[in-house]
Image 1 (cartoon, helix red, strand yellow):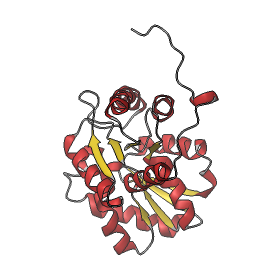
Image 2: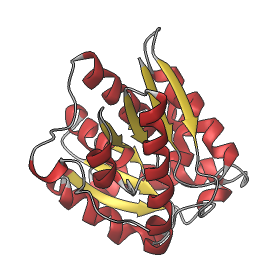
Image 3: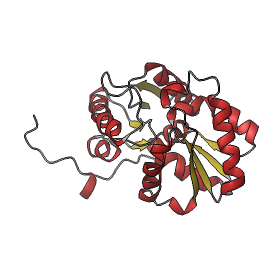
Image 4: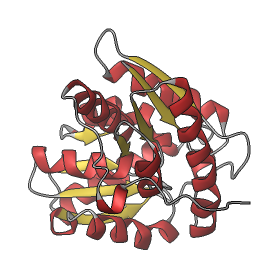
Length: 234
């Protein structure tokens, strides 16, 4: 089985970290490649960034179809280009926001998302509503650390941990969802310190794709997710 994990931003160091998380989560015999577009935003922190990134995601999906991948992960918490990707991929496509929020429902009554910047909180609520999990979401809290600073700022871990601790007390959360692929490498440490389930969306999405492929399942090709109509495209 071959899974392609797509980091929608162009930061190669983050792609390497995402690759490590994805590979650690799968069973022996499952091959994982992690890639990022060659052009687009270095991080995704706005609607504008998401729109630009979606083009790169779709190009990587189209290339993956030629390369023979069995399934795909979109490794950004906004799940940019997810629905369009499902129209063009033969195998399943899973975004890390959807996978992590749905996984949280297996582990507790309520979850809080710890995200990067406060400006992304509204978008994250929209996603929770779209996926039908808003009632289980007890809060969305920002640590106010830009995405590219997650691997540079020595205070990042402590800030994320403190926000998560506040969520457990003030929100009544049972589970913490990490709201950025750039937090993947902090998951194990946070779970050990907080003593609650902490979900890394990269691992959640990659194992979900692996499970769907093993079950012989793929996205429906009737109706909304049928292949896009043929037309002139410039």
